[in-house]
Image (cartoon, rainbow, N blue to C red; front, side):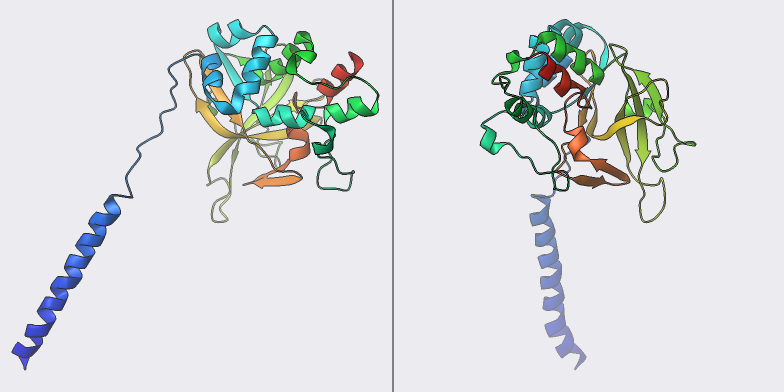
Length: 270
């Protein structure tokens, strides 16, 4: 009896082992370790922006604003808004495609072209329709002198700001911003999750703790070209967004300049 069992069990065991081995070899072809992502970019910040389709419009604005030397030769930190931010702010395209719903709707952002149209002013058809001085002024809000990686910023907790306020930093042209790292919650354990960089414009420098523009989370941090670092701002869907412990109003942070000052200045100059 024992010999009979061995006669049939042994081949089955061999087949199972062989099947596992073949399956593992097959999976190895599809599950390959891509290694650690390389944050270095062999080129300047301007070249990085020009090489990435997400920043085609931003690269054009830098040229219009006469800021090419700053992005090519100076050591800076750039919180880079994507082209989507410019598109949403201006509403480039036909007016019929401009997304606008009232205050109680899903999207309360009123594109600049819609405002110009209702005021019987010329709409913006190309980027150069906006003064280079205006582009430069508001792009500077995203630029900081020196190189600052995520690890260089202090902790930020919006629900516990007295203890973890982040830090206050002056932009290239003197505008104040609050920048910090949000320590997200993981498995209900506070501060044990992933770290996410966040920037917030400060509307009133004389009272920075109480007056903020909408907060913007960073989707990709610590991209390091040869003359500084780039932190790429996240793109949000309409309405309120939750990114870990961050609760963000997309209608505010999809606006170029981190506030509606850009819109107002363009309108006054048309």
